[in-house]
Length: 272
Image 1 (tube, rainbow, N blue to C red):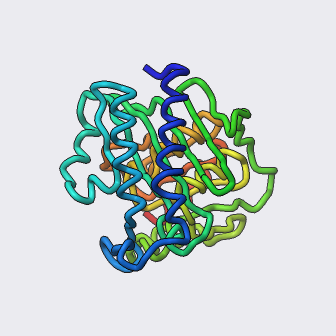
Image 2 (image 1 turned 180 degrees about the vertical axis):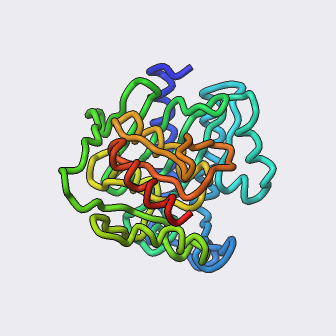
Image 3 (image 1 turned 120 degrees about the vertical axis):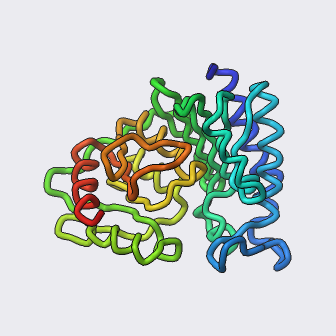
């Protein structure tokens, strides 16, 4: 299903949506083009919506019979998330991951696309336009960044682990308590920015692990495959694989190597 032509076609569609719908609005948004979805921290812009529409058209043309689960479409129709449980190939799309940063005129945002079938991730694309970084992963085919192979590597023995965690603006009191166990010797937690860019940092060996308390597939699908194909691993609170359709035991982690994942999951299990 995922051949070179499809990989190139998706990359072209992602770049086109970003160039036509997102970047012309970067640092140019009018007040009426930014809307709160579920509170002051959960924003959507005209760029998010237009880019998702562009990607939906392009991706379903590239793979006839496929469907799209996009962040903005699910916001409008939550039942559309159930396509992740169906039998059709599913494109999982976050048109602008890091919308708050985008609205503030910062560079920490990206577009995330993943392709899944029967709950298994087959390929993913992570595109950060400002530094022009395109990360691609294929199941059992490795991961690349701008065409160069990506490897997570492992932290140096005894090194303090840098862990990006769910941002406090998006966590409940219970979730904050569950993550608070990471504030311990040998671990340096910090709030995450764009989830997609944090996964990319793990894949590049720049961040040691992630610990997230929410499971929206569009935030995690692309990054989970990227980290796995770069040599990393992931696991949920019950030490089971992450399920795209939901119902995971949270929090969960993605990490540069198995030892780091076990360390983070062990701490999270103490707080669970």
